[in-house]
Length: 161
Image (cartoon, rainbow, N blue to C red; front, top):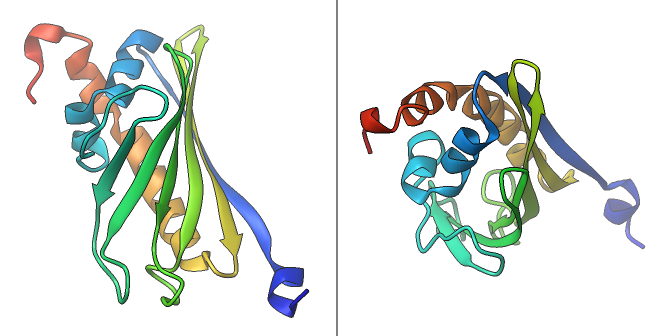
């Protein structure tokens, strides 16, 4: 065992928000590719079906072309949606280092609407320290930033895609 393996740890990013919307409205935002593009990135070849492979494209770095490779792992209608999130390259240090993680969205009804919980798990530190720091800040903006979209799709005749 190397010193790097002995000192490595795995971390997760967890962000929760309660929205005054039904699980069905939030579910639609999480599982419609055109809507995902409005709060995250445009997914290519996306379908909310287990086994579907899709990609996101972000800023390339070093040996990494910026492609995030994903596969839908779990779909429980209006309750839970998860997919793998893999990218980077072993030759990169910092931004663009190899990343092999899982994004899980969970919905649970509350008295005031629905609790949306995002868990992005599997960050291996210290290798993924940059991704963990950047995405921690990113997800804390993305999750509450879904609110304006939810207000629109809660009223289907006002959707602007």
